[in-house]
Length: 369
Ligand SMILES: Nc1ncnc2c1ncn2[C@@H]1O[C@H](COP(=O)(O)OP(=O)(O)OP(=O)(O)O)[C@@H](O)[C@H]1O
Ligand SMILES: [Mg+2]
Image (tube, rainbow, N blue to C red):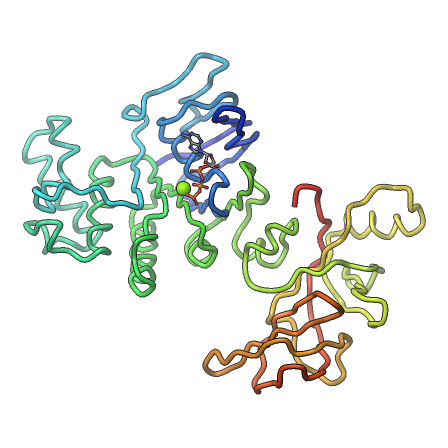
């Protein structure tokens, strides 16, 4: 299994930078998700890794060996990188049995029959399809077909598995089952996995680390918990997890490394976490207004906010939806800020109430966000 290293990768289509100076390190056996909106460059990154595209600049290393490095004239062909690839469309051969589909890459490489059969059995067992070896793809469900596609990539014993939205064609229930199947596969094999998705809950449920991409760049790469609790900017805060991102009117040092954040002019402020560097820059800025600091943003997650008559924020109910067991309120603060809140009771639209905030995260808004 492989560790993967990208340094300063840029890929242009005409004048358009599909990837812009992307650097990324993935450890041996790690499960990494590439997450981002449509068109942000996820598939392009995967195709570069696989060797279907050549970078304009930068270098890609697999296990310490360069496989793409235009400055040194290095470009290793896809078939010599030994990476397994699973796409959204399963691309199975309809006239071949499941076993033959899985073993086809080995046939092409002219492996002896016995060796082929052994590897096919092993791959089918990893995806729990031993009993389906003789069926044709037409006799399988969507999830089973996707498992055949996964088995076909495993027979090659790849050093890493690249998956491009492999569950996008499946219904919600099947997706959850397949997420479990992929996780199970990862545990059993310890394979390095790179999993492309634009579904943040899928990325959160599966990955050790998530790289959040936007406009050809990686905005943040971290564990799901860190992305959720401490997003670096507005884009990440908004894309990962539900919640609200509010502009900050002022910030003052608080207890235990936290800070007191003012959102509007009339509220008493909320306690939030902030990184020490941002806090010192923000408070220095009060004394030295010339020093440049970006605007601050406050990220609030629904579980940190509750309806409370003694709360510091005044708001008006904009919407109320029953989720089964609880309600989700959208509460308007000031003119145009909406905060999602879970509540045990239904609220009337237009009702005035107060919100107490137990936690939040302050980040510095960056230019591109
Ligand atoms: N062969 C190509 N020629 C020209 N432009 C391309 C080509 N491939 C990709 N692009 C452009 O590069 C950008 C990134 O595309 P990419 O397929 O990597 O996005 P993505 O993040 O995978 O999106 P999605 O979630 O929709 O699959 C897009 O704007 C796309 O139009
Ligand atoms: Mg794509």
